[in-house]
Amino acid sequence: MRLQGKNAIVTGAAGGIGLETSIQFAKEGARVLLSDINEESLKKALEAVKEHAPDAKDKVDYKVADVSKEADVKALVEHVESWGGVDVMFNNAGIMHPQDDGILNTEERIWDLTHNINVKGVFYGCKYAIDSMLMHGKTNGSIINTGSFVGLMGAATPQIAYTASKGAVMAMTRELAVCYAQKGIRVNSLCPGPLKTPLLQSFLDTEEKKTRRTVHLPMGRFGEAIEQAKAAVFLASDDSSYVTGQDFLVDGGLTRSYVTGLDGAAPAPENLVFGK
Image (tube, rainbow, N blue to C red; front, side):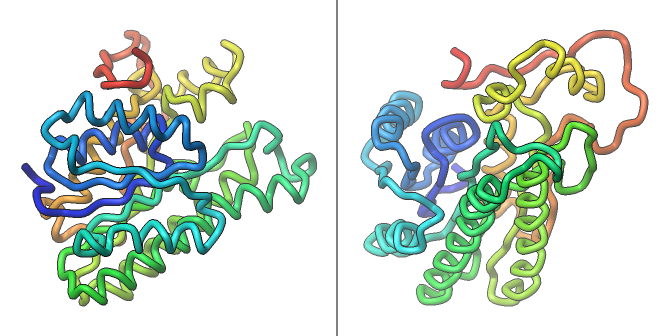
């Protein structure tokens, strides 16, 4: 098992990428602390992890946190101190606000809310995870920050606050990777393409909006949360020991495409929880 003996924290763990990753981390032997802002959803997520990774049922726990609050994020890291400190920090919590639009129509409060969660939450997660790793003398620590393909590309369907927040996360990731590389702490951005998860699909509430995006996807379909989770396992594990500072794209080829094919969608894997 690739994560045996590692202690992991996953924020935004109640659904989508966070839940599927928590399951995969547990299946790979990690001790996992799930975190999200809604306790009811978090309890359901914990039960899902125990169901799909029964051998790890005594190695998973949960803690409610609002990642925009420094004290909450600090408490997450402190929670795993008794486990021996954090080895893997997956800063995954984020929002995509329905009122996030172009620059002329997006209100300051939407900008601030988005950045407080998407950027400040990652800042706090990195800050306290790195502090813990240094304190415990970890020499193979891994921090994974959820970025996005929109941090690398422009779109005529703007979400200005979200796009700017992901660009900030990816820039911060590169800076931290260089600063702590010689301490044995790797920092990477996991950059999904458009996904069939609640975060995006609730925003794409018409077929027109969905088609506007799938036409640009070489595989002809949205990505699945489990595809991001498998990539997160790689970045968390020692298999990626020489990978740091990367915008790790799992986007179905979107950022490398110009004209896409006409043969229809490629097959997709099944998620363990979401979509069932």
